[in-house]
Length: 319
Image (cartoon, rainbow, N blue to C red; front, side, top):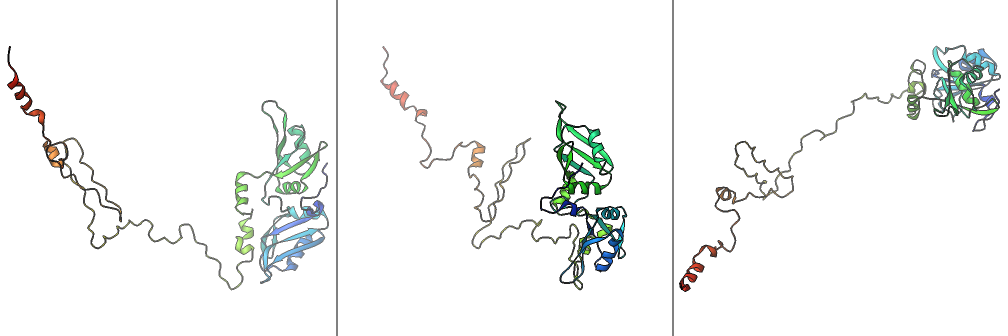
């Protein structure tokens, strides 16, 4: 059996269950048109038609509070709703601390040991159940204390979320909306579960822009202006007066079967020129010498002379 409780912000749950949210209202809808339409479903305790304080136009939404809960059920079962020649979106006013997205599935936490048949039988009292899951440990088979229940009507989910805490087999369980990944991303991005045919887009639903003011531009994808310099080839800085351009890379002989020696890359503007070519490269290739000449002149090979041998031969006498 379900028990009443109070939500986290102190609002009476019984009062919330008698309250409706109305969205997609036409900007020129009057308060009398708004109230008279919903008075057909029961006695109204209070209503609020949100308007722009400066222009007086409707912001596109409002709230209706009935004296009896069955008036809310009567209104929700009479969909679709049309006010002032325009379809409007009517649903239960869910507390702000709960997701505002419509969904057909709830998460049930704090469950005692049970089974899916018992869980489905319990929630059938609130609305038609399409699917029921009670999670168990794969190794032990014992219940993990939570499950999921899907309903045919999203209003049943809203009602259970407003109740939040209900009693099941002598234990208090908690009901929350079970949103899928796409719904969570949509909600985190500031979106709402709006029907385009009802709301006609956010600017129209909010009564914006004011009369006499143009709508803000909505450029399509790829309409951003190009930025100067992007994609253009880099231009080399001009040579400063009195300085010559960087020296070209030296050319090397090509050997059969081997590619040519790659040239030095051009230095970036402002950097010193490439290193000078080896002036002795041609002589080295011709085999004249294998090292750069010494500043002291050519090295004398004393061991190539006959000085040592001639002196020994002069003093040598046979026996």
